[in-house]
Amino acid sequence: MENVTKRLYEALFLVDSAEAASDWQGINDHVKKIIERNEAEILSIRKWDERPLAYPIMGRKRGTYILVYFNALCVKLGAIERDAQLSERILRVIILRGDHITPEDMAKDTPAILAEKHLIKPVAVEIAAVAAIEEDDDEEVPGIEEQV
Image (cartoon, rainbow, N blue to C red; front, side, top):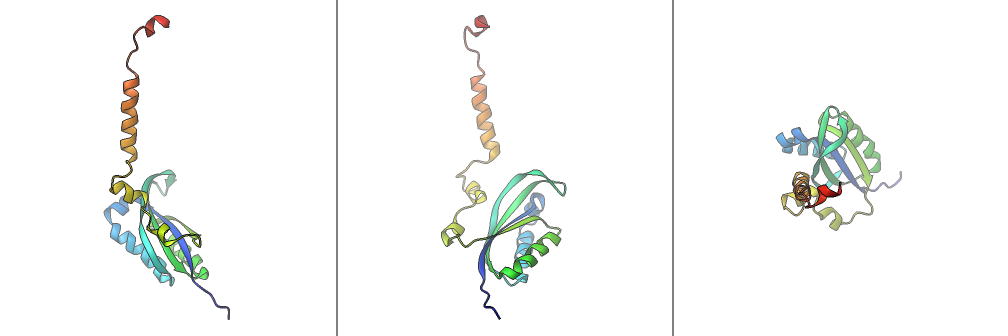
């Protein structure tokens, strides 16, 4: 029998933002259960970000992404993906091999954490700032009417 080793993987789970906001612990436990049921060892699990979707998925227009780093046997990945696809709470999942990921990469702050720390501005704040700048630019320039 071949000696099979566990490898590092990075997974991004997409869930409904409304459900994540109302039952974050339940969603988090559900994702953990899917991974641990398939004999994987979770190294890190946290909220990556909440964003509008490029197109509606199952009627949802916004999604919350959960970033998970875990060690697993490669033969278990299909079962993890299948369990996520069969789940009514998970809209999408992508799993990538993470051989290149270092512990420092796993510890980096996610966009959600940076927003909580106020190190990056939410999109709504940036849009308001741009609108305010554009309003200032719309002031009348003396003598412009004469040139037209």
